[in-house]
Picture 1: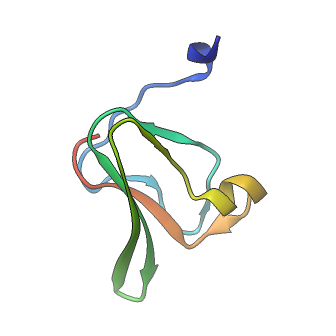
Picture 2: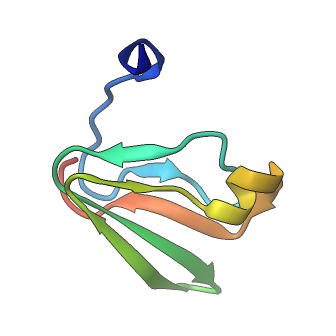
Picture 3: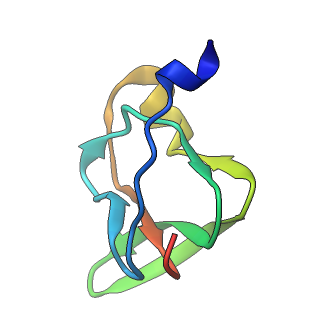
Length: 79
């Protein structure tokens, strides 16, 4: 069953689900809260997408090709 492959984990606001310069080896389902997909440029970070409750998110190219990415995933509220 699919549930045997899933692992529940919670994150606090500003916690990284995927830090920059890492390989995305997971696909996340946001059960509650929200997660931002962004990129760090110098001292600034830019949000490219926000995943709300009941949606999936990952750094797609990194996940697919298993290469490191400059993108990050970060909880924007308790998730």
